[in-house]
Length: 453
Image 1: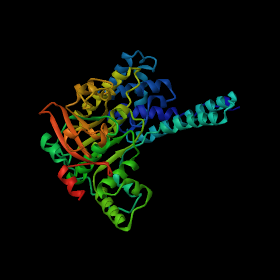
Image 2 (image 1 turned 120 degrees about the horizontal axis):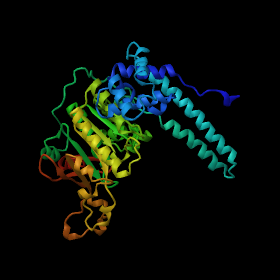
Image 3 (image 1 turned 90 degrees about the horizontal axis):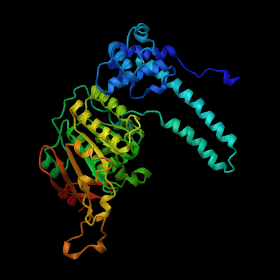
């Protein structure tokens, strides 16, 4: 009978993964982005892998001695078979070079076990005989949907997304990567004020919904990647990479993204799109749109990309969608952990990290809707950890033209303020820019006025 069958697993592959880590702790970079402790069928192998991940999170060496100490600290060393079992794990693999292959076996079989568990849940739904058939089917679909969403995505070069529109020229070689001292936003007033984004800084870009936070960081990614040749790692937890690339194409060509998405472009617009694809394809912009991303996964992906191609700037959109490490902390503690981790990542890779952040509804309740540092959502540690905090504020969002007081001058249509609310290494202030609604794009005011002629 089916119930007599053992769930799929491969103890040899599990031991090979842990043995590889004990031989070469740096191999954790190759597997931490997709392999979780829960993917191990054997409890002792699960504990050993968890110990390796704990050391990795603390930036400590992974080897037989440190793993034994970590297990002993948690009271699990003897339950795992003691030092003798760790020595056995080292003996089963001659090298760590094949760790990703072993890890994929462990992960695949874990998914199969989860699929069996999902089938049991779906079976239970069927036995409940819910009179609402649609509701029962939706619950069953949700079980499988959650299982599918657990798969971790990875970075995709912007060219791979653009290739879906038209054939694009090949990307330049990345072997000659040279770090860029300062990454510029492309907005003259902001760059003059800051002198560019400084390496090892955590930069927070915050605002209420509809202010254009994603648009601003996309502008920065485009300007730095295309104009400077800066290597950009863009983590998009809210929007799919295809949507981001459509926005970039719209910004680059001046064509509304809806026309690009629906294929309504004219012959002249199609020529502009082809030219824009060629330009954007050469930019070293890497997009990861994993929707459920843990901090440790993000760190592993960023480190691997940095070692393979070099990174000049990391963008996270947005901070509140990142997940902690499941320590049953409350939301404030989790956000504090996330912001500290982002700052640590900036220092570790010596690159600026720009994190988009939501603001609390307190902004809406004040007579003046201009954001304040106290409005940063969920945790004051965001303000504490950040080297630079910027707010996006557009007065037109709160007041329509008919309600605009004549004594305040011309209605601020398309005007936006970038407010430097905290600057650890410089002054605070405010920069005025133009926001193009049709292209969801920020521009220098003089440049925007010229393009509107």
